[in-house]
Length: 161
Image (cartoon, rainbow, N blue to C red; front, side):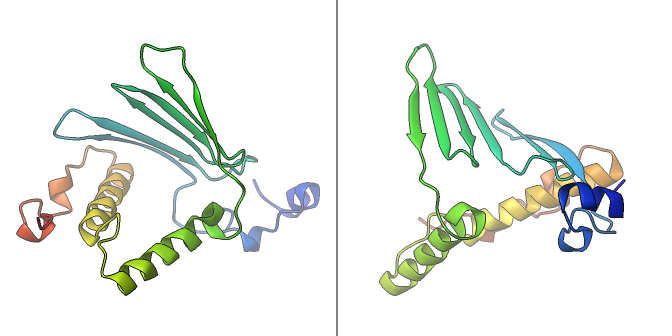
């Protein structure tokens, strides 16, 4: 329970945090996404926690990747190898660890040079649809197929070649 006493302990102000305010969004969630090709994705989020970090893990047939946003460290472990490839990401200024500035700069670069962005509107549409399916699954306590939230056969969802 968050109240004035807990605010005095850590200095966190309830009205400044969307996750501690009165609302109808969830404080924690887990989603498992199964793709037609057999690949799976797992996403977990916990907003009411003393940790303010993001951890990413990617498991694949060719290895494992782990990233820690707060430390700025990305470690890649190729499969069938003792090799560890470590990338240290320098701290950056701006929202989302500097990613917002990078995305905006890339958007402007694409506009000025007539280039195709790394992610398209189609990619965004699929991302939003997955998020909506996950939210429906959470709210309705059931498996939700992506076709329930998106017309997957719509020709507008095909990349131009």
